[in-house]
Length: 368
Length: 231
Image (cartoon, rainbow over all chains, first blue to last red; front, side, top):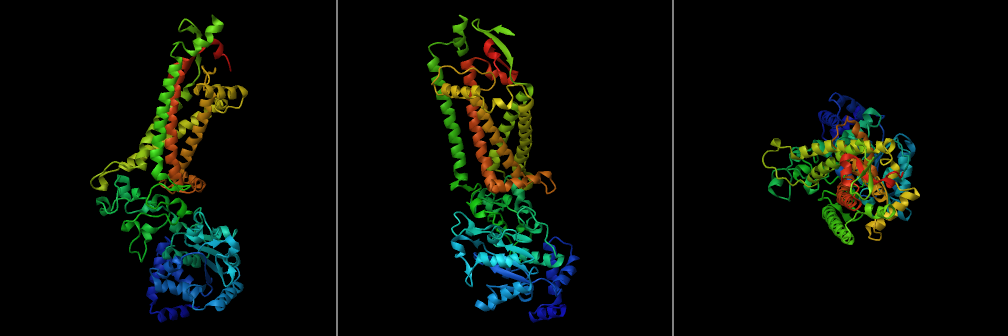
């Protein structure tokens, strides 16, 4: 679509050129770019040669699509992702059934190595993939074909990025992340979180359109612009953490004063994401801001390692470490102390008859 | 130098623990006490801090002390590890890993002695084989504590800090929460070890009357002449 076409689309949606440039500027802000980058972003989005997107949805709750549809500049973002670039999105596209599948097939065939695949949901591998099929094809099959031919694959949400809830123990469907299910997939970017923040989804696509390359990634292949610092680092309650002021119970005086949620099981110190700065729901607020501890949803295996959500220490092999570690530790130390005392008394008792030391006992024989 | 303490047995004064071993021991002792105390507070912040947050830095202070104690702990441990290689024969790695027949027999006899199945302890000068093997296990726990501690530190280290490198450990532990739990469990393992360690030192000092307790201060044990010469 040429710039003229974009403007027409904007007008058709009741949006001005100014709205569009506002969107580009806010995207520059999310990406940590200077505002001057906004014009480059605008040019990239208007570029008729920009890549096509396909959105695959597998084993998940549709939360990331919901999140996307509630982007803070929904009309512009929808326009960019849905009307203009997004060729296939099973959940929200108008076409259905074989028509929809034909669109996907055509897109993949005609744009080999040029389109971007966005994947939502984990990929079940159990029962020969029967747990998730679309148009009679297993999710794994579709993912291999579509991600295999993509210029870049964006795993949107924790299910696609790390397996998420479906892959949590005991993982009955054999669910895998996109990276694990399609090994060697080109230019994989994990955009974890449950759901992924719409600002970050849009910003990542815009980054790719503008720069024609991947953003810098962390060790889990997550973009640093969104996952470069821990929640704890930028948390508005951090002052209370360092001071030693903590919420002890829901609704207590400390909770009402906005103290730190560390003792209520906040996983902010173990979780990387830009929630404290970008926030949610058009920048209205975010979980910790409204008094709820972070659940750590952007981290690998968060269902297994971040639970119990309201406890500071995780379950390991089904044991609630936070509940038993101190009583058991203290108990074992106490038993050890008692056992030592009893052992000592017994040792003294069996030597009680003769006061001589073992050195003297042993050496008395040869020496005497 | 043969000296007669009791008049019954000629004892020889043997230099067992060299200065770096003793210094490392006491540095580990004090750092472990500090780490356990501050670590317990970090795990369970039990101090009530009233008033505006800007006037206080209780958790911050506990963490700072914990981090400096961790540096002392780590350096001491690695000094001790270095002494595995260059120390005298009582400090060497062979004292901690029972592989020779003599050490395996000593391990077995020590277990028999502690279980009342044997009246007297076996002859040895430095660590008995059971103590040595226990220290080796505890050293592994220390390394786990350092590893989990470094992984947890990446949360606080500056993005420019070279310590960020230790973020590679986080996935090995299964994530930061698991690292935190292992760190907490490790503290209790070490504290239980301390209880046993102090008891067996006292037992050895009293039963064998060779100055085990004093040796960690002075470096010297007092052995019967013929035992002291054994390698």
